[in-house]
Length: 276
Length: 191
Image (cartoon, rainbow over all chains, first blue to last red; front, side, top):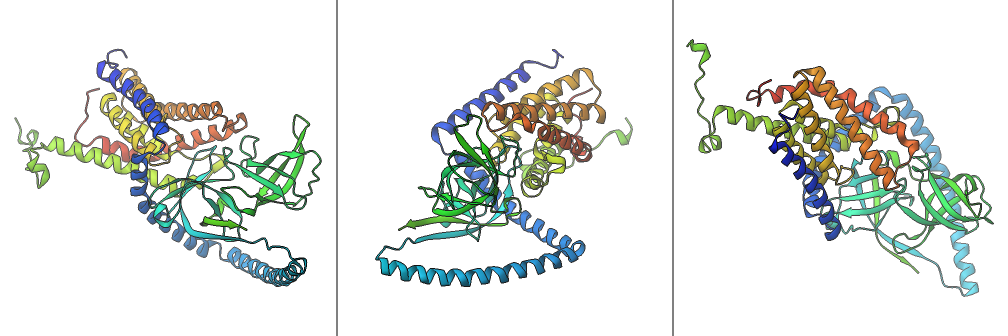
């Protein structure tokens, strides 16, 4: 083996190690990888094209082999739409009454507006312990790092962590390195939500540092508490389990994410929001 | 000398003629281009389709498998150089888990290539064995890095093992294509 482990091979091994260390240091110091942005910008149209073909193939497969299941899902969605239209009518009526009562009490209205940019997912990260995906819009569309990603229904998906001219990388809520400040909608108790991968539940979220006095019920809604990165009252998920932390001082809750992150095709990036 | 033993060098066309490349050099250029395109294609396929496909709780690491196969099917020197360039591209494509892939993939590929050249015959069983060892070592090294940084937990050991197994299962499927590409232009070293 020593015969083949000659000088050139040893140099190659040393070069590989030094390159890795050098690039890691350089990227952490500059905080902007030009080569990375260039490579991803070049790959984005190819990924988009292949993703389009894959989606068409999936739709054709579904049409050919899952027609009955699609019909049943269509009926279920129609019922859901009818229910949501009914809820929207009631909410409209409640909103009008709310405005009238605010005017009577001479209170200022609490109103949130935000601008969004829609984008389609073109690739997913295949790492076992991170959850990120790439979208087909970037800085040229007004998207920048630390912007929030939501679904069409306002459910939180994640945060933009990298942005090139024609792509952006979104880290989802399921990633255990992302923490979001949240509050339980029914009682206002706050906590921090992060992905449940470390606790062995990679498809769920975990809300930590909840006050021990908080009363948590099944299906309680958890929403964003508002920050520089997230508007207030965006739905994060629903409580499915709760308990005391190992320390006994605080509680934790296990949440089912509101957004169907695994089957996402389109997201909306909140580019600007205004909490009045 | 029989006529069949002598093949006249075909004159090149366009750029290859201007570069005064021999037929063997042209074939080797085509070989590395094809190898790169195959790795690129598998990277795109992984990102778009296979990253959401989780057989038995694990994923598949197609680009890593392709780089290891390319490295092992050539001699350690040329395979190692290709592995370094391919790892760099893999890193900057945004799909790699960290900067350490630029060191780990070439080092594993080169060491196992040297081991294979020293002790094993060039054939599918030897390449499969060495590639499988590379894949398992890479996956568990990545897992170790994740544990060190606190983004992974020991509960996920089964998922990592399953990913390594899934990737190993893909090796025989990729081997024919990569082997055919590696044989273009003749072997770069003698067994």
